[in-house]
Structure formats: structure tokens, C-alpha cells
Length: 156
Image 1 (tube, rainbow, N blue to C red):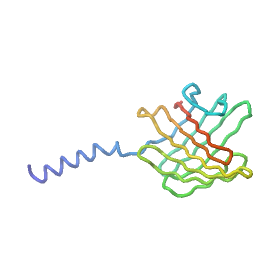
Image 2: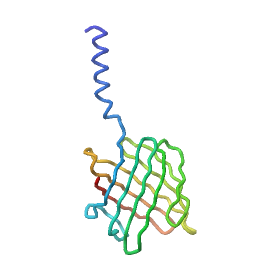
Image 3: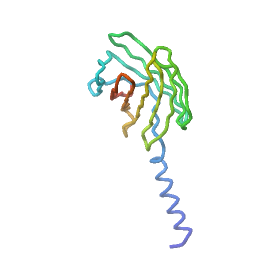
Image 4: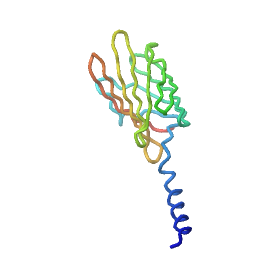
């Protein structure tokens, strides 16, 4: 086999692999599927939606939730390049987050202070192969204990 032919075959193989190397894009309007989700010790909300704009490394999200405790919305702006991002968290507290990719999973590590409690949170976002299901696995840790949740969101 000539070196030119070998180089062309290698180039075709590499080009075919490029889509597999692309990171998931979480953009879209999402709605919670409560029956597939697990809220741990917390009661399930009556509704939850998310609007996500993702143009890597930029990511903006807005989550809206309604429950017996009331309605709230939290909007955040991030970058997925490992640089610290600061957003307003629940109750007006400052939340500092670092986002990084672990394969096709986006990991969000956050720290905040609620009153006298230091809280660390981690979210792992994964997108189904068909792009129609976003799964968010959350873990919270504070002086009050630990909690985990799994949110299954469906693209609208």
C-alpha cells in the first residue's frame, strides 16, 4: 500500500470519528418527568422546567419549579472550561461553580453558604444518545447531612 493511500484511509477514519468526539449539547426546553425522577428526602415538585442555551464553552440555564413550598426560578451563566463562575443561588446567596467534562458527562461542582451552613453541591449532566432525555444527578453536603437526587428531564 502506498503511503498516500494509507494517509487517505487514515484521514477518512479520523473524519468519521469526529462526531463521536463532539461534546453533548444541552440546549433546549426541558420538562421534568417526575415518575422517572428520585428526589431523595425532599418532596417532588408539582412541576419543573428548564431552558438551557449551550454553545460550548458557554452554558446558560434557567430552572423553574413549583411545589407546596412555592414557586422559584434560578438562572445561571457558566463556562465549561474549568474556570470558576459566580451566580446567585437560592435565597440570594452567592454560588461559586466549576464545570468540567468527564467524557460525555458535564460535572458542575458548586459551593455556597446558606445562613451559617456551608454547602457543597455536585451535578452530573448526561444526555441520552437520541438527545431527548437529560439526566441530572445531584448530591448535596452540609453540616446538616447529605442528600442525593436524580432528575429526568424530557426535551419539549
